[in-house]
Image (cartoon, rainbow, N blue to C red):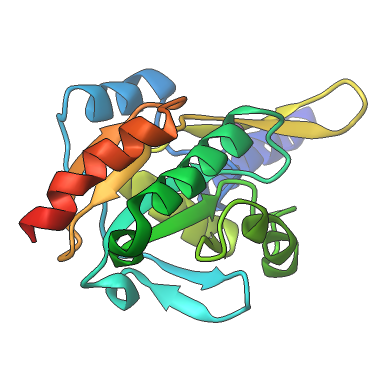
Length: 200
Ligand code: NI
């Protein structure tokens, strides 16, 4: 009997990773390395749902410069600060900023439904698009951008999500142009975008 219990436990362990969890499939160190030292390509196709409930793919945004940010709405400080800075940077760019599309992709699809994102994204910029999807779709998008995220249980039964917080800048053809670190000021974001807007 014990043998069967052990076997069942092993099978569970083997099967569990097949279901997408709220976490990246690779370690924080590996992913940080991939981004910081440009060791791996960044970006790629995704298939998600926007905050109005409309299906969206990377192809929908061709022709725009993209600011891609992964985070979650319950994030206490880093996400709201960066999203606010992105919104202020777009305002600083004036009309030229219309060629920039900011995207907020949740790493907490369980709580960040389209309806929940609809309440959140307009606080930062009227053109900010929130994207969510099932755990597998989110993991696929996050993996493509080498984003680290993992669900961390809190004492009260609640949870938070640890995540890397780079602002990815993508060109009009979807090509990766570079990243801005968390905490980049609106001035600096606008400065980084101006030459890209002028060049293309
Ligand atoms: Ni955050």
